[in-house]
Length: 159
Image (cartoon, rainbow, N blue to C red; front, side, top):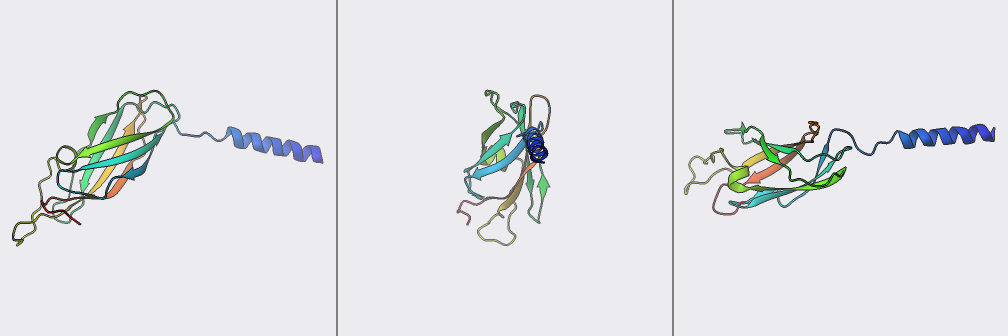
């Protein structure tokens, strides 16, 4: 009886140990941190994204879609591709994405003025960012969604 229990425990442990792949073939993304929820005029947004990938070849591109959620004039911009700098193969790592105000956050999105404001004041843009990574094999990651990115469109700081 003890032999059967011992053999059963060894088989169970072997199945558990062999069945656990640490990472998937498709890259996985996770937001670790960001410098702020509110991006003031001409500031940058910095995102620290953790990635995992079984083959360790997440060295192709990142794609970022900007979606403005404001009730007046919502819009979605096409995905902007960003090349990932070359780095040694690793199944786990971190990207730091720096999004500049003019080039990456508000490009091709005109400000929305608040009617009747004097002096003229603009609405704060509420953005949703969708980020996808592609590895050398062409596998696309899950979509990392970052919500509540508020972009100030006024000279005076937003709160």
